[in-house]
Amino acid sequence: MTDIAHQAQFAAFRRLFPAAQNQVYCDVAARGPISTTVRDAVAAHLDVRMSGRVDKQAYFDLIETTRDRFAGLINAHSDEVSFTKNVSDGINAVANALPWQAGDNVVICQSLEHPANIFVWQSLAQTRGIVVREVAPVDNAISADAVLNAIDDKTRVVTVSSVSFSPGLRVPMARLGRACRERGIFFLVDGAQSIGIARMDVAADMIDGLAVSTQKGLLGLYGMGFLFVRRTLAEAMRPAYLSRMGVDLGTAHEASSGTESSFRFAAGARRFDVGNFNYVGAVAVNQAMKELQAFDAAALESYVCGLARQLASKLEAVGAPLIAKSNDTRMAHIVAIGHGIGATHDSVDDSSLLALHDAFEAGGICHTIRRGVLRLSLHAYNDPTDIDRIADITARWVKKTAPTIRAAG
Ligand SMILES: Cc1ncc(COP(=O)(O)O)c(C=O)c1O
Image (cartoon, rainbow, N blue to C red; front, side, top):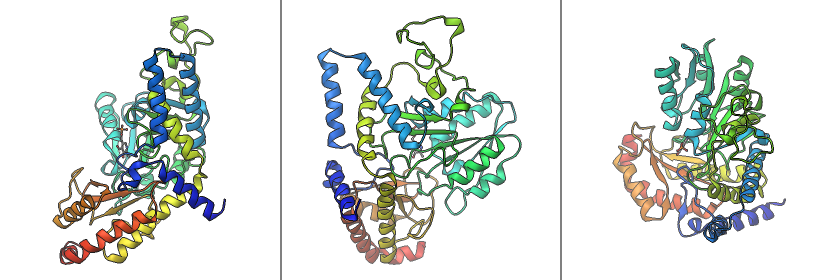
């Protein structure tokens, strides 16, 4: 595809998102907006429910199409994908199905992880005697060296976010994946922030488990997620929750119980499916993934991350403080304005940053405050006009508050 054809494709995509047109929408790290086509697909689904003429087989077909689509997106097999509520659900499903021995450990950089990937380990420390080995962040990111240094012969799991929720930097996944595979350690990734934006290849990155939700970069709804578990590992795991969807019922009806005492788990990660599915959530994300998959995945990533670099570079040029500069190789689709990571989830201590936040709000720049920084996160519906609007507002703020920035700097 030529550059012009690519640009036309991104422009057409942007037109599907009202939220990207009546403001500068830079908040996919909190949640993605839905497109008009996703809204229409959901409305059509609800119309059928309202009519009372539901074809349950069509629902199951939709689930399998959606499963296949997600598997294609991450280079997995469909049997390696199950449906969850969200990231926390997926991580819990894995953590509670592993054969822990007291004293086993999980290596994690808790200070940069979202709570979705924290409490389950703390709970297992209390109930199963596992040890949570904390890795300190290095320069606001999870360092592969630090993680590898923390591994010992009792390490059973290494868990990281592919991109941190704040300040939004990438983790070197392939390096960690390879090291874990060599040592027989389960490599579990929280892909909430990168899925749908940065390419995800579970085979290339040697990922054993991947949990995502659908309301951010996948541009679907809340209350739905996917869990990937590598087939050979899944087949050695016993899910903590088991229902008919996780059991191989052969050709029997979904609600038949079969031979209860001699049940067989469903293939691969399908054993983690629990009961009826979130059909409306599947309708939404199936449609959204179809639209995302119309792009070449590498072109989409390079467009979005390219915009983020452009934004960082314009903000640097006007003198804004950034956590990662535009030439930082750890940058993905998130730009964080601020002086450093703060302790509280949704506030900034610095009054000048608060003034910039207010200026963004007044100027229609949708973003969030996370851990002491202003977080601007981009997707394929953004374009260079968004970058210019943010840079203009920031330049005016710098002129007004420059002395404070230098003092805080
Ligand atoms: C890295 C990361 N993990 C997980 C979540 C959310 O977890 P859950 O889907 O369980 O609500 C978020 C944001 O909401 C996130 O940024």
